[in-house]
Amino acid sequence: MIKEQDLAPQKPATDVIIRATARSFDRKPRSDWPVSISIRDRLRYEFQVRGPSLWQHRRLGGWTLSQPEFVHEVPLSYTLSYGGYVLNGDDDKVAYEFNPSGLGFATSESLKNGKAFSAPQIGLLGNFMVADPLTPMSVEGFGPIAKTWLPRRSEAGTFDADWQRDRHPRMPTDYSLSFWNAAHGSLQVDPYLSGAETISIDGVSFDHPTIHVPLPQVGLLARFSGSYIGDLAITLDTVVVDVTGENPDGHILDLTWRCRLDDPSIFTTVQISSQRLEG
Image (cartoon, rainbow, N blue to C red; front, side):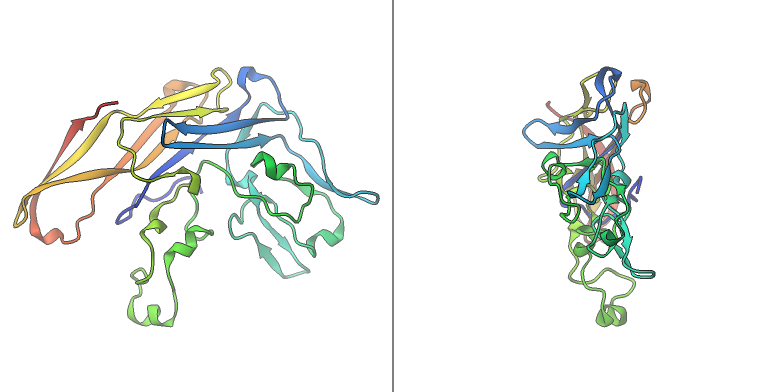
């Protein structure tokens, strides 16, 4: 999943989504290196990227993980994080529901053929040190989580016969607004970011150990008139940073502010104004 749709009634936290390629600083090929994102006093998230490696079965020693290849860069995609699917027999397809698109997922049945298979290239350092292909790894990455994947799917509520009869096509009555947060759980910031922060990203540039992305220090305010007159703050609930390209001139910052109106009928006009924030 590359991009999340922008339609949502409300998000209870700010989504921070990063589009990037992990790059080895100074272009020196490495077997692995850390990638991280931080926002002072608000957020710290780190994982490890590695070159390709294989789970291999040996008659003496069982399953072992090969040493990762030396690489210059690793695409930060969930296709290279832990997950995927296996075939237990001819027709029994079993998927890892936290990331059906990934690498390294195995079952006791799928391991019986003894064939080598690809290990994840993105994950926590401690997970990589566990020498057991049946021990699940956590799913790590910077991109949005698909609505159909766990744990996001569990926030969608109950789609049963009662829902089909009484609610469809609306969301179930027991769904959580957290369903609309698409970012990885470690990249959801509560309370919301204000817009005056600086995002620092390590491990994604050949030329700079850290890329600093200052937010524009601008907030939005909605002024309403009608049967209700007053101001409502608009929350910054989505921050998308695209540093995929090597040239910083091509980097993109995309911000979304949102305001929820429970009864839009009481408003006749809405005026949006900006306000300068202190860093």
